[in-house]
Length: 454
Image (cartoon, rainbow, N blue to C red; front, side):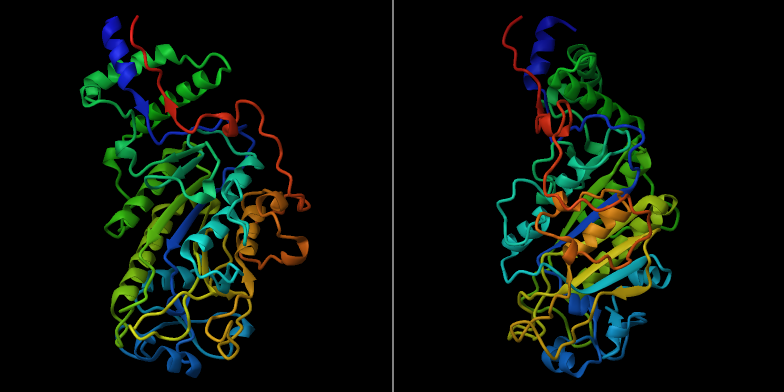
């Protein structure tokens, strides 16, 4: 390729949504955590409902889950003495999750969440994703602080946000790749240089610019960019087929879950994946009296998607944990628009091969004594659920740094997951220093240099 052509290619070249961590030692954890965030405030009392509680039925009226019919609740055994005040059932549109629950792959935590009075979506999401309730000025996310204090196994793709951008839980971590679809992952250039034959030539030029032989940060980041693009191409992501019998839901949620499954199967060292699913702000027309409607259908999509991911990755279940959360629950009472307004206590879900499933965890506070007279009380801090997963599955004992403000007095593991404790919990809030060349020092995005003349 001539000098002028190479200059043009470099001037146009930008590797977008591509951020790289430094290589980690092979002795690190090979566990995989998938974090699914339900944005908008999912109604936990419709997801896992005390459907025959007289207080619930009176407060919910026509949008209460029906007691009979095609959409009647899917009765479960909570195996928890505090849940003896009423029956409990998953929403009738969630048979896929019922199957996982009965099979011991799904654990539920009710009356769980962010113990803060905010009813703001944005504040609540910030508090949860930064891991610091009441403080949304924290400069990093809870996943970031886990990654900064963890020892990861080797690989090119340690962290993937399955979408167009990374969530606040990855704030200030430069080792994440935002990826909507592996098929479209590669160089972002002017159309003239994005054809296959021209792209191949551009990769040759870039390999010359970034040999990766030194410790210069730009050289290291550039080389890892090239290596990762090559690894993804070698996996032929455009021909991905899920495991036989697995059907993902249509739409962006199903696509995001398939992206996660594809990356896991590429065996490129994935440690953390994040997935978002919005559409949970059900202030009006939440459901019909027969159990059909908008929210039940949304819960059905969630149920089918999680079931598909678990079964697609059945060969990885021994090291896979999936956690599902939302910023807050919704009020017990139905509003004038047949919806529910912003509430408090909610449900978290944990799925995986080392989950002690088929049980509802946490203390059920009942519906007689509500928070501020309208909301399900919170009896389990969301950080306790995440902390147990980090400690027992991801083998990271630095909970004080990951969740500043959480103390030993407030942390009592529920027994959600199996795993060997990695030693005494470190409750110090101090992060270890990030050594030069590690994730915290690499640029957020690699922009190739603009050259105007030879």
